[in-house]
Amino acid sequence: MRPPSHTLADHTTVRLGGPARDFIRADTEEDLIAAVRDADDAGEPVLILGGGSNLVVADAGFDGTVIQVATNGVSACGHPGLVTVAAGEDWDAAVAWTVAGGLAGLECLSGIPGLAGATPIQNVGAYGQEVSQTITSVRAYDRVTGKTGIIPNEACGFAYRTSVFKRDDERRHVVLAVTFTLAVQALSMPVAYAELAAALGVQIGDQVASTTARSAVLELRRRKGMVIDPGDPDTRSVGSFFVNPVLDAAGMAAVEAAARARCGEGTRVPRFDAGDGLFKVPAAWLIERAGFGQGYGLGDGARISSKHTLALVNPGSASTAGLIALARHIRDGVRDAFGVSLAPEPVLVGVTL
Ligand SMILES: Cc1cc2nc3c(=O)[nH]c(=O)nc-3n(C[C@H](O)[C@H](O)[C@H](O)COP(=O)(O)OP(=O)(O)OC[C@H]3O[C@@H](n4cnc5c(N)ncnc54)[C@H](O)[C@@H]3O)c2cc1C
Image 1: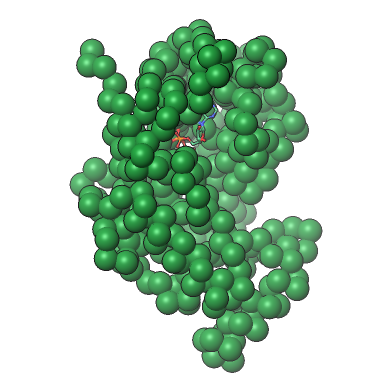
Image 2: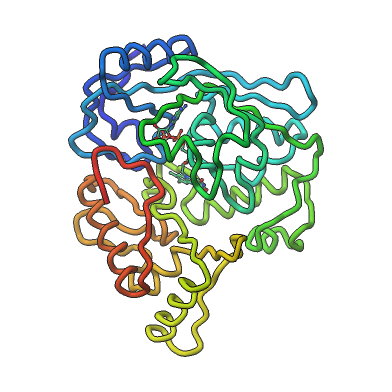
């Protein structure tokens, strides 16, 4: 087998990132833990690498050890519907396996790139489902105690696109496996997302065959460049570059006032109820209304996807510096237009926004 490339652009979906000083591929849990422990003992900076679909790495690369998770195994044992997926399993393959096996709860998360072990990190979600709804527990290696333990859902601190794993700057936990409790049924969970309901021709709350829901989600995602396709430059991204801002009533009123002043009196800012009196506003709407349309770029390669305003892409000639400059430009433009500061969704390594 060829040794893995040390160039991180070869391991990230946006195809950016310079060299790693050291690169280790861990095919077993024992190898993964040993690699992390050895690097920690040596005081070496560590970057855990999954599928590289939520990573923006500096052009200078990573001055430390990159440890690529390549473990595998999906098992359904014990209680019906209980499925444990090794961190290194391809996420979409795992979803396909559950849907084909008559298990519901992950069907709307079809087509999300990356590996299973990364899904709890930012509580991946799409089309009305989040992994926090079905994760029972996460098995992880704790870099502080040097022990492996089981972290129940309640202790994972899941929220919109985040968790204790993502909030912890020291990256204390290495996820080894994730256990889900899924419904044993051929029908999907009730459809909870208006765009998906419309595509399926059903009402919110209706159920369809899980296989049908999966196909519809994949089709919607493909149209937006949200399924990796090596032939489609619009899929060379990290998915959404910004998280949708969550605003309280006062913040919402301020954005509405700015939107009316900018776009006309009749303008209504779209929003989703985020509970507790909070509203989630589509970042894509703010970006477009701030003047950054699909295909927009600063002329140095990086640009907004021509299929989805929230994805910043590297069509081939971009650098990380160029991608970050574009992201800053958009963030500042949205702040000037609406007073909202967009936060990045991906993990930034060696760069800041
Ligand atoms: C086209 C496209 C569409 C996308 N659509 C969505 C979407 O709909 N919804 C969504 O939520 N996300 C989406 N994403 C983002 C991304 O796919 C997810 O966040 C995914 O879970 C990242 O997995 P990964 O294995 O690629 O992680 P990586 O990018 O390799 O790593 C991400 C972070 O997790 C850490 N990490 C990875 N594995 C482990 C582990 N085993 N233990 C500890 N830390 C670990 C890394 O160190 C890094 O900090 C999309 C990305 C792309 C490119």
